[in-house]
Length: 575
Image (tube, rainbow, N blue to C red):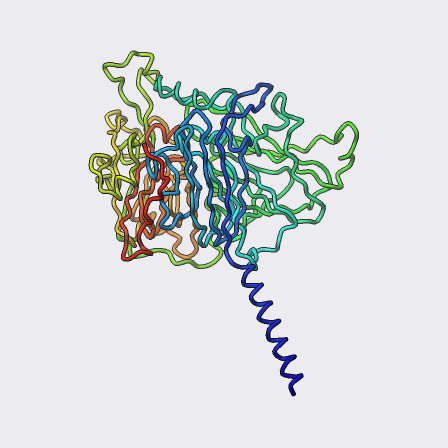
C-alpha cells in the first residue's frame, strides 16, 4: 500500500512537472533588440551609395515573435537625419508612445540620440513589418516582423514545409532624402525610382544585378508559405510566379478564407501570405513584381524586379558555371489593369463570421486625393514647377495635413497643450461635388492645418473613403495606425448611400490595417475606437503624405487604467 502511494505520488509529481514545463513553454517571451541607424555603403545598379540602414543591413533585420510576446527595441541614431521607427500594423494597445510616426506620437530621434520602443503583440498572427516614419528614410530603413502563433498553437492550414519572406522594395540611384527635398523645393512631383527590389535585390533584368538575384527554394510536392510585403515607397505592385498558383491564407496579420489566384496586388504597407505548391516540372521560375499604376499622365517606374523559384531537383543547378536553364518568365498584368487589381482586393473574406460593428456612433465621409496650390507671391517661379506654375498638394476633406515641428500631437493631446492642433477635422466634405467627375478648378486648392477628429472611447466608427479626380484619380492605400478595421465594400464612381449600402458584407468582411481605395472609387471601413491615443490615418504613398494626405484621430481614454493610454516613457525624445 505504501509502495503504491509512493509510486502514485511520483506519477503525480511527474505529471505536475510535465504540466509546468509545458506551461513555461507557452509563456510569452520578451525579445530585446538593438537597432543602430547608420550610413552604410550599398552597391546597386553598378553604383555604391552611402545608404541609411539598420545595423548595416539592407533590408533591415527580420524580427520573429509569437502572439503574446513583448518586443523591446532600442533604436540608436548614428545617421545624419532625424529618425523614428513605426511597427506597421501592430495594434499598440495603450502603448501609442511606441507607434513611431514623427511629430504624431513622438518627436524624432535626433542624430546621436536613442529611444527604446516597448510593446506587446496581442491577438495578432501573420506578417507585418517595421519601417522608418520620418521623411523618406523608409526607402531603405525597413524589415519584416513575423508573428507566429502562440507556443503550442497551429496555423489554420497545414504546416508549410518552409517559409520565405519577400520584401518588395523601391530603389533610387540617388539619395532618397535628396529626391524628396528637391520635390519639396520645386513643388513638382519627385523623381521616380530606378528599380524595384525583392529582399533588396533588383534581379536579373537590371544591370549589375544578376549575381545577387534572390533564390527561393522549393522541392517537388512540398507546399511552402511565402510572406509577401509591399515595402515600396510610392507604388502599388502586382506580384506573380511563373506557372504557379498562389493560395492566399492571410493579410496584414489576419487570417483569411483561402482563395486561389495567379496574381497579387499589394498597395504599399500591405502584406499577403500565400501558399505555393511545387507541382510543376522541376526547373527555375521567375517570381516577378512590377507597378500597378492607376494615375493619369504621370511618370512611374515601369521596370520589373525578379527572384527565382528554384526546384532543388532542377536540372543542372550545381553546374560549375551556374544553372544552365533560363528561368520561365511569368505574364504580368498591364500596368493599368484595374480590373485585375479589383478582382483581387474584392476576393478577401474573414475565415468565419465576425462581429462587425453595427449601431454606428460616428458615420464619416472622407474625400481623398490630390490638389494644386497656387504659387505664393513671395516664391520664385522655380519653386512652383507643378502643372501651370503651381505646387502639388493633397488632402482629406479639403484639409492638407501639416505636421507640428516642436512637439508631437500625442504629447499635446495628453498634456492638453494648446496651439499644436485643432479638433475640428470635418466629418464630411465641406462642399459636396461630383467627386469622380469633372471637378471645378475652384476646388483644387485645399486649406492646410493640423486637424484631428475626436472619438469617444468605445465609439463605433464607419468611414466612407472616396477618391476624387482632382488632378488625377488614383488608387490610394489608406493606412490607419493603432487599429485593424473591417472592409465592408468597395466600388467605383461616387459612393451612393442608398444603393451601395446594400453591398456591405456584414458577415465575414476581411480585417486589414491598410485599404486600397479604388481609383475613381470608394471603400467603406468600420472599427471600434478601443485604443486611446492620437492615431494618424494617411495614404501610404509617401509622396502623398508629404503633400498632406493625412489626418489624426484623437481617441479619449475610457474608464480606469485598462482603458487609458500608458504614461509616456522616461526616454521619449524631446524636440
